[in-house]
Length: 342
Length: 293
Image (cartoon, rainbow over all chains, first blue to last red; front, side, top):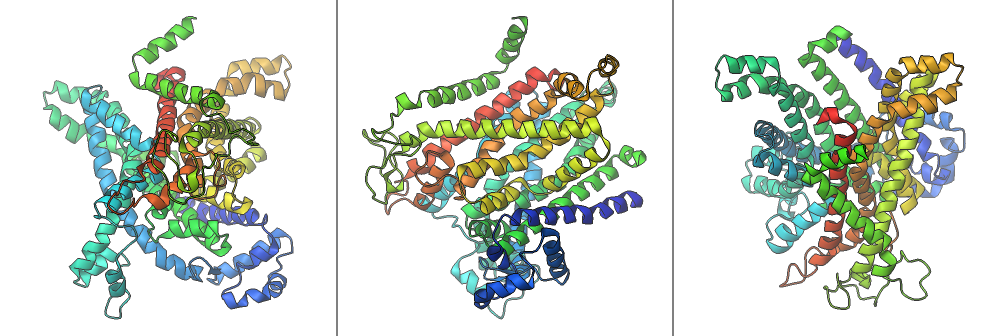
């Protein structure tokens, strides 16, 4: 097992190398002047673009440039992001907790709703409940997040004034940036609670409701489908028949026997789902003006803020690769056959 | 005929698949009949440019003159919806067909030749798959510059790897079968074996996945348009029309839903179009792959 994990971990730097190399290759389509902005940390230096181009060899062949860039990154220098108005490393530290918090409050409801209705759908196969559940799931899967997001905003913000966009109101903004506020976790709702300010905590949570609801409706279909088909498969297996023959109540068979096995693919999928959420919040954050990694990445791309694009994409790709790794490891943990194969 | 009847039988038992066919059929009719349903104004050079009636920034509600109302800057929403159907089909078909072609060729070559060809192609595939789809697509369009063609290229660039990976796996198993050995012993060339024997026998899973992912291709492309990276303002494209509605979700004072039509109408169209493809995809899977029923 340890060997398997180590083997997969050794593969990680290779993929990261490929990912950065591909990004760098894509950037070669831009002029050296535009790429020079990657190295300019301060807006005041913009006048010295030619010097920067010379210094970092931006007219040199791509592999040479890539080497120079890698050296920079190795020193922890990712450049300055114009859209975030701060160095990329700081921007990641500022935006990532927001995205992480949004993902976290969405992830567990998705798991609960997806598994619950997936199992119900399988147990009541081809009955009304199954049809309704599957129809609701496929509509969520077919509805673009920006359409749902805008409609929700129209009703719950424009009409009812319940849930405003953004991450917090001005009062909370003043509070969390005040000197008396301690940042324990970076998760604002938790931090506000730990600081004893329940009003601010409620305010932060209120801002999470609509984006979380959007992500939930859009992402739950996949998990629901997989739970359902996995459950259906288990219910036809011999051990279930044996359990029925023993005269066990159907409830026990479903809960104690079938569900435990049916959840194997769900467990392995969940880490991918979590990361899918982290990456998929791009549109949702933009619609709700939620200051996370996704919104920053989109703004950076729209304004061709290359350091910003490079930083946010690199973060997304790293998380994606890590999630794949965790998913494979979980798979090996819950399914012994994979380990034997290695 | 027998086969067609079989397909009909499968479909009839699945009202949802029929709904999918009906939806896509409806949109197809609208797309074909666009010049009749919404004739371009006289002297228009490009029918995809939505006519403007004035330049007032506020959208106007549906009326007799403008059936679906107008967006900001008075673009006629009905005209945009009708011609946008063509854009939607063009994007969906072009992107899916091209990325399937690339995936089949690269994955087929990787599986058939093996060795370093396989290594190079599949490691490249791994790298592209390491990005979340939308993130890489946004970067590519941003670099190429905003336009509908660039949106299509970027969505193709992120879609082909999953087809390539699937195709490679199928080719690996098909190339060991007896009929391939038979063809080889008859002296068939590599390319003949690959294109006449292996690809036709391993392409079905790719087609099933392609039909299931058409809906998400449409959503990704529309999302890029929504972010302002796609067609220019005034072009008949649903995602673009929705991005025009963003400033109007608050409504007017005292009338919160004053501009409901700007988001609701293009939103419903995109939703039904994607739903149609998703239901159709399920139907295709049932027909081509009876095991998964």
